[in-house]
Length: 144
Image 1 (tube, rainbow, N blue to C red):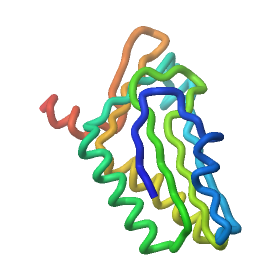
Image 2: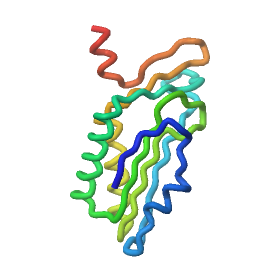
Image 3: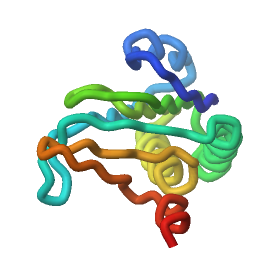
Image 4: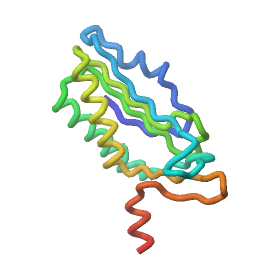
C-alpha cells in the first residue's frame, strides 16, 4: 500500500505491475482526468497544490483504513500536482484483491476519502481568463 504525490505525467501502465499478486483475482482502477468544463465554466487547465508532508501522511492513513474495512492484497493512489492540461491524468487509484467486491469498495473508499481529507487544492483556469479555487476550505477561510 502506498500513497504518492507526483509532479510528472502519471504512468498507470508501469504501476499496474506493482499491484500484481498471485493471491488476487480482482483488480479495480479509477482514473481522474482533467475535463474541459465545470459548473458552467469552460476550463482551459488546472493547477494542483499540496501540503505534501501532511498529504502523504493522510493518504497513507486512508489506505490503512481501507485495508481494515475491505481486505485487499495491494493498493496504490497517486495524485498529480502542478499544471495539468485538459485530458491529463490527475489522480489514479488501484486496488487488487482476492475478490472484486473488496476491490471496488476499497477503490471507491480511497478516492472519496482522498478528495475529502488530503490537503491537495485545485485551481481552475478558465478560457475567459478568470480562475478559481475549487472546494478549497482553506482558501475560503483565508478570504474571510
